[in-house]
Image 1 (cartoon, rainbow, N blue to C red):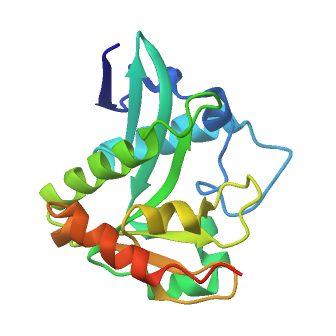
Image 2 (spheres, helix red, strand yellow):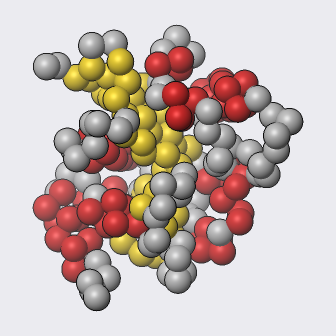
Length: 191
């Protein structure tokens, strides 16, 4: 079966997985019952597409989105300020906010495929790093699992007991074996 990685635009925005259409964890500073998450997400995307350009990718198979990634400069994600390690974000970096794979499609390499596609896009646009806050105790929340980031070549740049800032050096994107080997060496010991 053929699957494609495509940029999110206002035409295919509604293809985002339902959980992602309803998630505005990174796009708004505070949780509020008074907001319409779909409206907020669409407004955020529309604004970022106009001001900065591409900021999302989908893995699509037979017209259905199986996975989604969202990224932009860190200053465009207000919730990031809640995480102390985020103070170390680089001006030469783009922040990976979401990398979501639909239930039933996980473990097939779709997340890795998205990270690689985002990394290539960001590198082609002149950025040196892709960064993300990782959650060492991931429980299904919207902060990416640190183990997923490590497995994709990210390394800790500012540590935190639970939420470290991790970075993928885009010079290594062309050499994934080098990046993955470095990340494996930095994985915490299993107890």
